Image 1 (cartoon, rainbow, N blue to C red):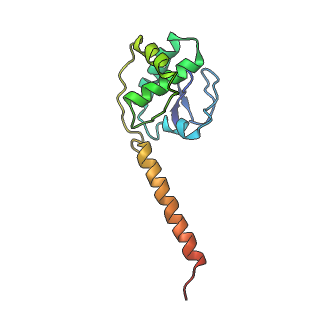
Image 2: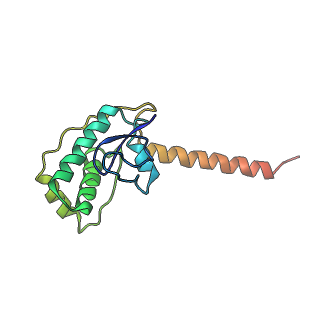
Length: 145
């Protein structure tokens, strides 16, 4: 069964698309992000290290919006091959200031069962697959005889 990171509490849960048994948090609205932080794409060691980052951030602020933004900015700046996220310009200085006061652990990105996911590469592969399917569809209807 898939092991995944709970993006709310930082615990490791069984199943990327299920609620966390530790904190009760539901999966995110973006299924891709839940799967991204699973052992399909990252080794369990990396997931646990990201969990420590989340817990460190969570312990430093009661504001959920600040905690979420801090984790997204952290990922975007320190591990852009995993995920890039653009925060609204006016919120970035607040989040950077918040992060500057924290000592976050190092995260070693290790590949999961399917290797390490590069979102840009995945998007390119999906677009190429869509182009192939569109060409195949066109050929189906455009039988030349």
